[in-house]
Length: 436
Image (tube, rainbow, N blue to C red; front, side, top):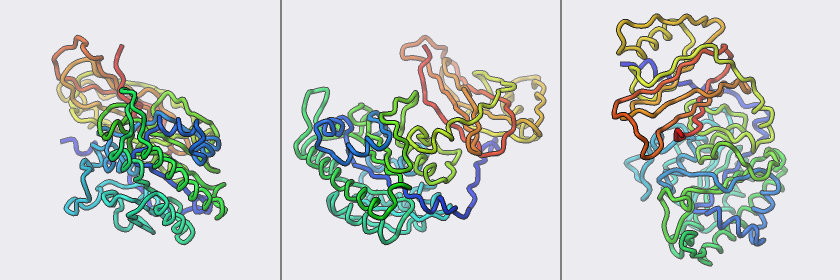
């Protein structure tokens, strides 16, 4: 009925600038890399490459992956900027030919549309679900350890010269399943085999860093070291912090040396794809759940300044005629009238449509979707204009556990009018919080 509400911003094919062509982003995933163990090994002086990257950039030990914290769904979120529910890759067993490739745009696809070169080196075949045809200039599946993967990655850096390279090391995950990640709750230390796998990944990462420097690309490079999940004992996949927390390290000439990041928001695995695009100078889709970690980028200080847009008028409530989650931008009177009628479809008489001067203003609207009880709310907290992007910070609120709520259907919404600014509108979900 309200299909007109679901329009998405179309990405245009553009020619890359000289500055973009000169940039290199390498995403390194240490599959199963448990941050608490990595951090301890750094303190013990056993991971010299990671130690040097920490000193040369920005990092967090409390970034979060998806739930379930599984390899294929998590990596898909990492490289599409979307949650599992939105990208649709929910299985984790093996490469399923009948499922073909992920249906949403990947970070490689968007970089290619911007005229940049992309490459992909993995050590698990199921990750090829992300390698959509026509989106990669080089693609390698390596049946081997981190050193063999790094060897292929270095060769691709030299021969293909990609602007965006993804590299996957499976060593920590294999060691964790075979011998154990340890358990902080039970006081079980990580297995020697798991520690050895992390040390091997550190050395392999060092070979890639050395290659970037040898090729003269380090000063125009961003290296992100992260993971798809952690683990406990010999398993993972749960919502337990030992499984969900992942390292997130950004270093290189394009990185800001901010050290350990202590942000008000949580860095999520979807943010990796968004940060990679931002570093490459490619626009991040407004439909993505991930957002750039500007604090980790050298250009971030300029990007984060922005201009806060004044909220001129607003309407909010718990009941409306739109029962699905929506994020809407309105820039003309006819669409505004249709939206207003949809919001108040259950009210008689219909409240008068508020006047909006669309020559100078625009309407932003967010809808949380139908909830089974009271106590839920959604709010457009702030709106900023930054680098030809309009960032709409959205806050969702839920009732705390055991709260006394009314058993009634609600459809929380918030609509605001702000000054009209040229640029791409991107809604940024700050996360679900509990009302105190």
